[in-house]
Length: 536
Image (cartoon, rainbow, N blue to C red):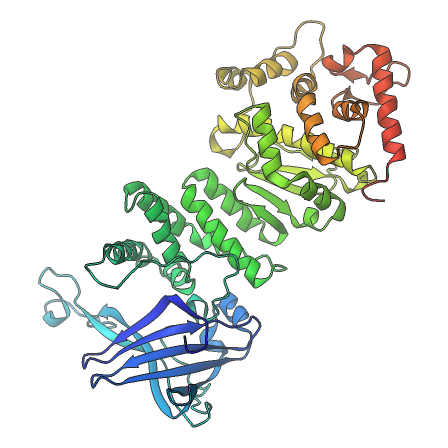
């Protein structure tokens, strides 16, 4: 439009009683600028049209103003210029008012009763309302496209003309058209979009903070329209999902990782909102709240698989490199589905640190807290070949998925550990029930308690581990893949060099012939010592 990229999804429409109408569009611009511009198209009662551009000058970048929500405090001046059809430039004199109409109580601010001011009330006793014009900015321009300073000493009142972006560079964000065709009541698409907007208003009118967020982010309304269109319209389920997402939107907009770019933060808010629309449940709400509570440690979030990559892992070249090469969550998901169709990577937080209770563990997977399972990698054990680090990743993912299965049948976002709970899940997860019963809650006579998950993995998971390792690096021998699959599944304690057994071996490792155990260990040690480490 007139040589600019404009946002056509968030238009301020103004109409006066004399027939005057105007349309205000936000102009797209580069990031980091200390101003933004709007184009206003005005249609007068005599049939003439005027097109002007208003430039709002700020004392800081527009992105920072948006983050701080500080438009009034940041505005220093505004400039108004008129579009010349002859020269096709904005350069001639013009005066303009920029604003919008809104509904307020007819006697707003007055303490009145129906008895002393009946004109302030409707016949049913509710408060009467009136339409008022809220002035955002006004001024007169001079030839050449400058001048017209509204003055920093008297900032505009009522609204924020930068809302919805002012800057329309929503990289990676899909902003669909709310409707196709004319804004006409004979157009069903327009009618549907209007009905959706009315429904949204029933929620936002009761919550100013939510209303402000919706108005300041041009993508929210059209994406709700699109969501409802593709999911069957204004059904009760879609209304409930929209209500859920909007009621949790403040938590979404509390996600402001200080080291992320403005574009990345916008995309984070967009993805989080869609996540809530598509998952209107307590677990999704807990996941978003976890993100908000840990906002400054976030490195990367995969909403499709509910995997959080902590900044500590994102900033570690070795671990982030292995995770990326492994294919991230989708590859974990696909292999887990082959292993067990009920497996589903979900609610994971991948981080780096040393657990004081397990300082010699290469990684620790914690049982769920508020539905989130954390895997913490020990940075002191990265002087190992990358393929072995990949093995650690998948080993811990298997732990996490067993926790997720247990969590799925536990109330409150935490696992309710007890023999009766394990017994109660036998119809859903008979294998997990079997191993926790045999190795923790009902240990046979003559057998010591053991790590139930390691016992299960040693017996049933080594084949899937080998498949993942081959996808990561297909240059090794079958003997190396087999040896790596056993690492971490041999048992507890230091290995005896003569027997190849730790003090408390897993049953599966104990059943391996002694000579084969020593051969597997020798193969691993040779691999470890003859391949470069992931990190020195």
